Amino acid sequence: MRIFVAGATGVIGRPLVPLLVRAGHQVTGSTRSPAKADALARAGATPTVVDVYDADALKRAMQAAQPEVVIHQLTDLPDEAGALAADALAANARVRIEGTHNLIVGAKAAGATRMIAQSISFIYAPGREPHLEEDALVPPENISARGVYALEGAVTGTPGLAGVVLRYGRLYGPGTWAAAPTGKGFLHVDAAAQAAVLALTRGAPGIYNIAEDDGEVSIAKARRELGFDPAFRA
Image (cartoon, rainbow, N blue to C red; front, side, top):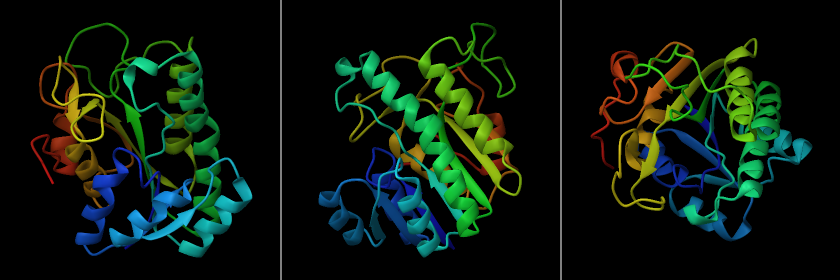
């Protein structure tokens, strides 16, 4: 299968690309950093250096790749959690709003029929736990929440594109802000990557909680429809 991974050198993209290549997929991985292109090539992917905000260049890159599926793993976050200031949150929300729009336009132009996109599971409004996918989210009163609403609505609401949203827990493991869980609702980065691989061919379009089974969110739907296992390690 031809796969276009947007954000292929990010925290989840790094373990995801080798998993896709080992599964026999033809992978094009995007990065906005020319210095990271060689790493993608060494992992077995075809690198493309493009900025998601350059809509025309992104569309050309996606048309060249002719993906059947687009995997959206783009974020714009600092390397250290302590640096997560208002401007960083705004930058990440911009990726979810503008970046997602550009990816969808590119996906449609390239003939892709499925999109898998990263969201977050720690966005539910206070209430009973474990949260189900249909539970209410916090109101879109801050920029982070508005980004999530925009991404999820666009991915699941675009005609002709089977959209799958993976609501990831707080990540831990290599390259993340945490070496181990420090509470509930966490997810190892390898399990996050594997969930995207599973969603290539499994599961109806829609939203799935992807986290550890610790009582904060229900992962019953992901287990049942995707075959998700939070214990997976690459």
